[in-house]
Length: 320
Image 1 (cartoon, rainbow, N blue to C red):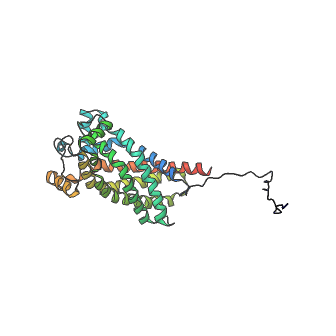
Image 2 (tube, helix red, strand yellow):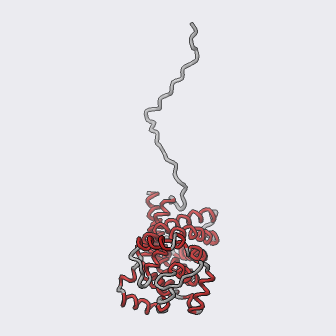
Image 3 (cartoon, helix red, strand yellow):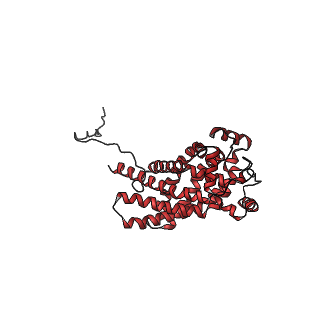
């Protein structure tokens, strides 16, 4: 009777002190953070920034909205503020803040996470590459604007004097029914054209100013927070002033047909500018530049310092 002479192999048991550990693959990190941590830090920063500065945003919207009776809005910040407080009370400064809260968090999560990833790819290891910072900012804003534009439109319509909408849900439902989904993105092209140079100037100025200021106080944590706030404020103010005319166009497109504001046959930037200049002269293109600058300087300071503080917290968590 034939027998199988091939040797029998048995698994060798592991030594008694062997303890296997299961390790999950880690996602690539930049600045010691994971992608989701950039998103959370950006979401916190954006929400804090916009909620804190919302009254100035309301003043800007009121001053930029043209038409009848919108054209009767005063140019001066003091007059606009006095009018709102007299006729509507302090609550008038916060109409639409719910829409801002719903839009700012997700949009800034996308904004900062895309910025960090783009900066990592485009800078190619050079932390002083201003062109990479500017280009990364443009990529980030084009992406985040797609998220934020619908809620920004809702927010601005709620901010108008005698707004016909009861709240965020009512505004979204009526716009969808009466104007269609395209109304939510009527200003998207203008927003991107405005925010691309805004963000390029903002990020390039911020990174350059931060680098110079950090050289003065490389180790002091308290001074580093001041550096982020100072660099952010300067970058925000400069970028806001330069892009005010396009912001006026954006407001016109988002508020068209509401409270007597002009209705445009197309979302053409040239068409809107022509209408503004015909009604108000070239100064109409700078409506609201003071509250816009006053908004973006401290808002950028709040946003960047909050963002960098959130990143630092995550970095300590990751290394601790």
